[in-house]
Image (cartoon, rainbow, N blue to C red; front, side, top):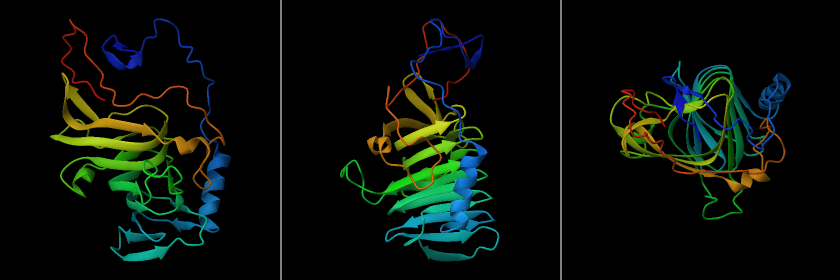
Length: 254
């Protein structure tokens, strides 16, 4: 654990060195990403515009093309499971099957994205989702209101290669509840999902993160990662704390 120093909360000072007892891993190469893009164009679903995608039961998606407003459904049965766009993708719905959603731009989650067969209830569930952005993955500002008044649920292995996974406008407005993540996060750098004061949330979300154990042996289609991982350490429901005597006026982010 580390605490920012010198007034910079994103500048860790490791007093006991920086040996994390794990080898350093490089991000996916351009070749890896080309394989993913090629999979979308040959057996998957490919867009060259901004789209909203909603997963539906029965291996289907509902698509809205943002510029034209056109809506339609697509069957994913028999596809290779890769969905890709050169523009922004917004995402929500009930995932029935194994898929990877990729964008060379940002990906926004604008409502719950959950498995039709929840592996928490059925460890043998074959529903699986990879989210790969070559920029950022963000929880959209009002995503928590799509299926209710608060909270957001995301079941996915998330990869943000340009920067990070976080919540849009995390430091403004009222608390939005809890961000429940079942899966994993791969990112260039950490981003915030909310701010806190004392022991409570001031804005954005508190975290409820759980690793999906199936990711140790299952991989979403064409997902650019190593074939096998081992879990060294996993912490859930982490709230940063403020030490006595710290009179910083900056509201911490989580």
